[in-house]
Image (cartoon, rainbow, N blue to C red; front, side, top):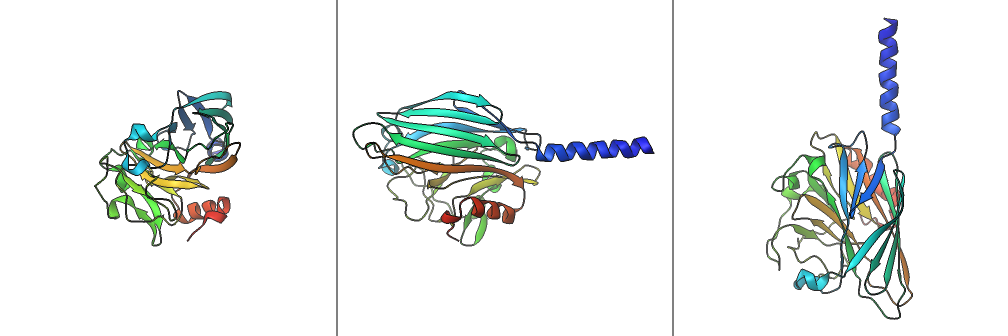
Amino acid sequence: MKKLIAGLFSVIATLAVQAAEPLSLSWTNNMLRISGPNIPGEFVEIWYLEAFCRSGSTHQPWDKTTIPHKTRLIEANPQFIRLRTLVEPSVVLDHVIRPKHDEVDFQLEARNEGGAFVDIQWFQPCMRVNRFTGASQQTYIEKSFIFTQDGLQFLDKLPRTEEAIYRGGQVYVPPGIPLEDVNPRPISAIKPSNPLIGCISADGKKILATAWDQTQELFQGVIVCLHNDPRLGGLKSKETKKIRGKVYILENNPELLLRRYKADFSQQDTE
């Protein structure tokens, strides 16, 4: 009996350590991997970064919108990653990425080192959610959500549009963002009430969500992915801007997610 009790205490202690264990990070070939013992599917990957975009993007071919860029690794260990992105002709983005036990924090500084304005409006971290949701391209919107004035809404329950320069996916544009400067995919008439977009795990026990303090669009993609695409809004000569982001991996409790979001981004709360 003593051995059984000791064994139970050992299991409980192990679970408690795992629950508090920080997530770990790696970055290779533009793919950021978030790993941890309590992540459904073992890890989440983000194409970091997919694209940087000019204005006028909604009604023009994608190759006219994207700006050449290259990201390189400056420093890395499982608890800290520093990246630097060069965006033509003269923009530098420095990224500091740190994990905790149930979130990843992004701190970015963008500066224009050139002598002229650069029309860099927004960029795309592409969060892959196939492993987390256990769903396919056809079914993952049933597990994906945004928040509207009516609260958490699953994307398959919201009205969808189909017409756009490119078919497939769905774009949700926050109030105040020019409709001419978003993804050239179908634009929903539904306005998000905050910048959170996320999904529920295959077993229904966890939430994966992401938010930034400045958002150009929320996007349900054409692969099994979700986007919160951060806004830069252009950079004047020698101008510097700072932006912050989060990825949350929490228990499936939307109220907890909202509390965390409001604590981190209270000035962005529009509910």
